[in-house]
Length: 112
Length: 112
Image (cartoon, rainbow over all chains, first blue to last red; front, top):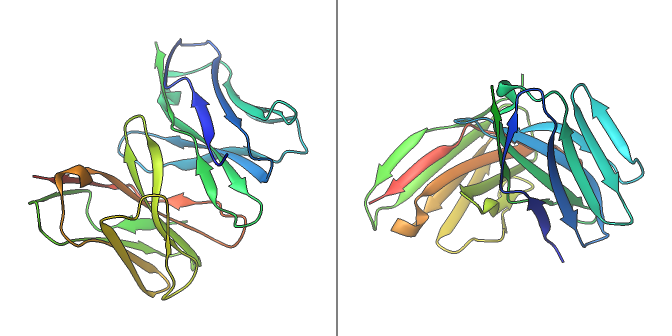
C-alpha cells in the first residue's frame, strides 16, 4: 500500500521523440508527487512536481500528467534530447508524516 | 546555492571494518536522510533525522546506525561492513513538511 510502482525500468528514445515514464500508487494519503532527475555521478535533483488537485503541469519540455481516479501519474519529455539521458525517479509524499515514497527509477537513453 | 556534501566519492573497505560516511549541508535544513541506491531497487531509505540528536529507522536500517550531533551534519555508520553493503550511498536534506530533498553526489562504497 505504501509502494509507488514505476515503469519502464529502462527506455530508449530517438532524439526528437517523446519519452513517457509512468508511475502508479495505491495509497490515497499521498499529497504531492515530485519527479527527480539523476545524471551519472550526481545525486538526484528535483525536476518537476504536481499536487493531486491539478491534472497537468508543464515546465518547458517536461510535463506531468496526473490521473487521480486511476492513481497514476506520468512524466512526458517532449522533443527528447541526448542531454535528457538520465535516471528518472517518481515519488509520492505521505500527507501525515511527509515521507517520500520512491519509485524504482527509469534509465532513459536518448539516441542521437 | 544549496549544497549537500558527502565526504568521499569512492571508498573501499574490508569486511568487518567500521565505516563512517559523512554528510554536511549548508542550508540550515532540519531534515536529513541516508539512502542506498542499487540498480533496479531505486532509493531505499536507511535512516532519517528531523532534528539534532534525533533519528528514525527507515526501510532498511539493519547493519547501519547514524549520528546527528549538529544540525548540519549527519553520519552513517556501518559497524561491521559486509559485502552486501557494497552500494551507492546518498545523503539528502530538506526543510520542513514540504520535504523537497536536496542530494549529495553520493559515496560509492565497495566492501571486499
